[in-house]
Length: 333
Image 1 (spheres, rainbow, N blue to C red):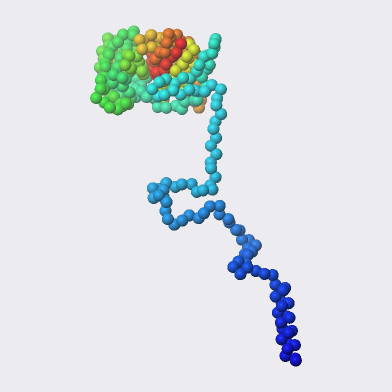
Image 2 (spheres, one colour; image 1 turned 90 degrees about the vertical axis):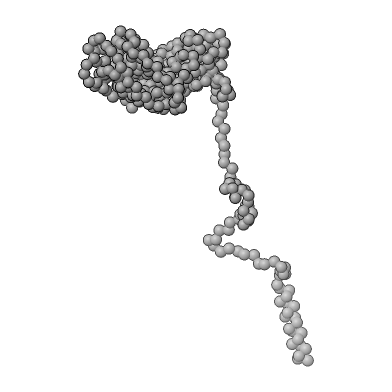
């Protein structure tokens, strides 16, 4: 009797414990609760596989999925946009309205650069005896020739030379020709001029230096004082097309003389179809060039290719242009 009672009590105890425990699925592991200080990182993309992609073999790295796409800002259009024409044609910069014209946008200040052509020696007002030992950096024109003139103080041509560099492939190089001369006086003021021309015979660039020719004695040379390009035109640019009868020329200049800066528009026949000038102050302290703006009215009947020249005239006893640079633009009425 006692044995049956003990078995019944054990069965009741097991039923009671079983009723107090919650049911758990047999195939689900218990949840993991991290301790304090552990950061759980949840990746947003699938991990990379060990098999290299075709791009990896070529060295091209593709961006991972989920990376942020960089923001590309598009500038707002300006009030007077510049229309860029194909490279085979001119570039339109302005369109006139009735009774007025639109000025091009303000040109950026050009950085000073080394002169494209320059006379290294003799320098200004050097005392030179015959022959003049010229050393210059030049860039031949369309005919691959360089023209050299030596003018006397009365404007006469003492020496004229044409140097042919048709066999040279370089666009810029140094030359060192000897220029013999004869004068009747003991000494004479002179100007040595070098220029190159385009296919229409117009001057592309002209450089010069004033010298003192001596009949006897040894030469006494000064240093070259022009290392930077004197005239830097920022607007209009090469190949620009302008209409409306007025061209606004902007840039910076380092004057080589006290005379005004002259801008001329010359067509393929050598006719000046527009001109203007302005006085440019000498550079101030800390500046190599001073800004300028020239308003050039012009007259053409149709679209015209012109060479825009920027030059200064002599203020000494010898007349003529002392420095000239140019660029080709197009004009519409």
